[in-house]
Image 1 (cartoon, rainbow, N blue to C red):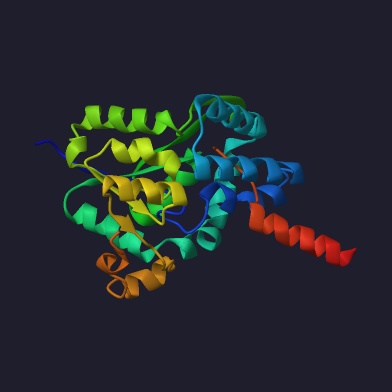
Image 2: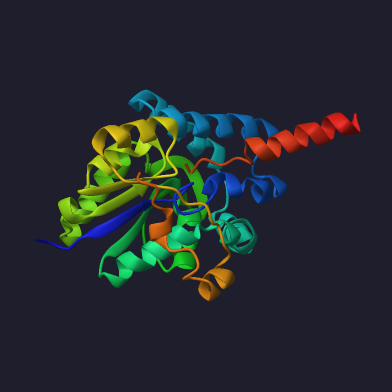
Amino acid sequence: MGRSAAFFDLDKTVIAKSSALAFGRPLYRDGLITRRDVVKTAFAQLTFRMTGADDRTIARIRDYVAQLCKGWQVEQVRQIVAEALEELINPYVYAEAAALIEQHQAAGRDVVLVSASGDEMVRPIGALLGVTDVIATRMAVENGRYTGEVEFYAAGPGKVEAVQKLAGERGYDLAESYAYSDSISDAPLLEAVGHPSAVNPDRALRRLAAERGWPVLEFRHPIPLGRRLREQRAVPVAAAALGVGVGVAIGVAWYGRYRRARTTAG
């Protein structure tokens, strides 16, 4: 028996929002995205997460994201993420997910975040959680700017291929490993390990989990890091078990508030 690992999807699994959409507001504020980008990227991500996507759709989303980021300064993006991390991500980390990560680490397993969001976003979130291993989308960079090409897109089959490659390099026994996700688009990732769990699953994944007999976990308590350290025993993971691209945009909810505000002003 080899080593085992625990692979966590990020959005709606570890944090109670989309990591890419969360940073949309500061990216918009700094002029990196437009209102038109709001609708296109939010809709693309929502469609992908709710229904999965074939290879053509995945490629189309990947190429759109690449062109959206073309010319951005990498350091500017990193600075935006660093400045907004405390406000936009820390309060939305599920206490149950943080406790589960700690349990896997205490058991000697490596924990890996696996997300279609950009590495510049995912890695700092991992550091917030004490997780150093990350599989995320990587954009090509030249002279400190994104070129508009994607080196690796961590979505669809790409996630599974990266997990399998990492397992081969480190000697993980995937049959003894764990995976957690909320989205039917991650069904291949869940099927790649011996211990899959659906977390806050969408309708399609909930149905698949029932068919396969996978545990279904409901995470309901996003708590900031400071409170989580003080109250880490208040929300045990066991109580949450009920039997059971970088995509960049401001998000549907924020856009809705913008439209309502504009209508009121008019």
